[in-house]
Image 1: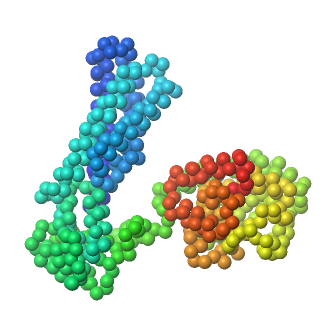
Image 2: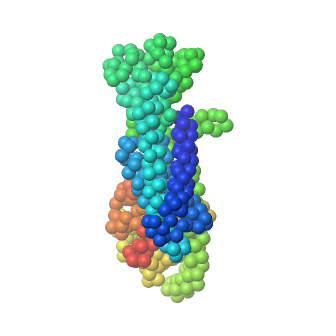
Length: 470
C-alpha cells in the first residue's frame, strides 16, 4: 500500500510538473507577444523554437527533479529546502537550454523569452510544490481519514519503524501507538500495553493497519495475532526479525505467487546489471577491435623476444568460483610457473596474492607491454564472452582462492574485471591483501553504474600516464 501510494503521488507530481513547464513556456511566449518591443527589441520566438524549448526543458526538468530527490519515497523536507532544490534544478534546466541554443539554435534567440520562461518555470513549480509540501507535511496525517497504524514490538524496533513511517511519503497516515512484545516490559514512549491487549485495542481504537516488528522470540505466537487481525479485517505488515537497525539489504519478491525474503549480498540490481552488461558489450567490442589492430605488431615483438605462445592462457576463478580461461599477451618466459615456486619467498604482497616488482620471469617486451597495459587487451574477449566485466575485482588464480578465508570469498561474488577500484587506487603502492579485499568489498557494497564510468575514466588516465599495469 505505501509503495503504491508513493508511485501514484510521484506519477501525479511528474505530470503536473511537466504541465507547469508547458504553462510557463506559453505564458512567457504570450508575455513576449503582449510586451512586443516595449522592454526589448528581441523577436518573438517562432513556433518551432517555442516547441523544442518547452519539450527540452520539460524532460530535463523532470530528470533533475528526480535526481535531487523530489520524486522519492520520502515525505518532503522543510519548505525552504524544497524551494532551494527547485531553484537549482531550474538553473540547470536553462543552463542546458542555453548550451543547446549556443551550439545548435538560431542566431537571434529571444533573450526576453528565455528569461521569462525561466522565471515562470521557477515560480509556478515552487508555488505548486510549496502547496503540496504543506499539505503532505502538515495536513495529510492530521485528518480522520488518515490511515491509522499500530506498531507491535520492543522499543528499539518500534522506534525504528516509527521513524521510517514519519519519513515515508503517503497521502496520509498516523501512528496511534505501540504494543510491547511481552507483559512486564518497560512501557516507554507511546506504549499502549503488551501484545496480549491487541484484541481490545483493535476493538476500542480505530486501527487500519498493524505493523509487527517482533525480535524473533519464539515464545510469541505470531500466528495467533495474525489470525486476530485477519478475523477483524485489519491489514498487517511484518518487519522480518532478520532485519536490524542499520541494515537495508533485505527485500521481498514474489515468484509464482510465493513470497521470498531476499538477503542481498551486494548493491547490484537487475537494472544495474543490464546497464553494466550493455557497457561491457560496447566497451568489449571497442577493446577487441583495438586488440585486433595491435595483434600483428605485438605478435612480432613477442616472437622476436622469446620463444613461446603469443597468448597466455590461465585458469582463473570468476563469479562465485566459476572457472574460466583468462587471456593475456604473454609477458613472461615459458617456464614462468615453474620459476614462481623459487620466488615465493620474495613475495612483496602480504597475504594470498603474489607480487614482485622486478620479477625476473618478465621478458623485455613483456615489461613494455605491462607498462603500457597492452598485455590486458586479449581480456576484452573474456568480457564479450560474459566471463569478465570491464570493471570488477581482479580475477584470482585457483591456487589463491584455495588459501582464502571465508570473508575473502566475497571479492569473487561478482564478475572479475579488467580494471577496478583497487587498480585505480594506487595498485603499485598497495602491498596488503586485506586492503585489496577491503577495496573490492567497498566496490561491491556501494556499487552504482556511475562508479563504473568513473573507474574506466580513471583507468584511461592511469594508462596514459603509464603508472603501471591496470
